[in-house]
Image (cartoon, rainbow, N blue to C red; front, side):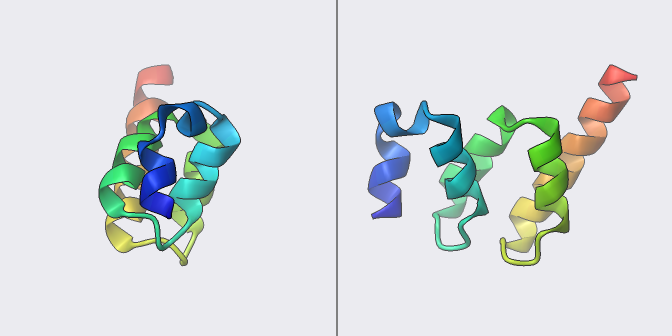
Length: 73
């Protein structure tokens, strides 16, 4: 069911739904990896601290937070 929601553009255009898909450990990793680029910085920081998501996603979020901090300041 999560795959169907993630593939539907109308559902994913809603930030809350996209954010919850990324936070859900059962969401397919390829969709979550695409969505982290669209998350706000504060949500990315929370993802780096979350133990409920896959390690690959947590590491990607950490790299993105570092990249955004370097670019922003």
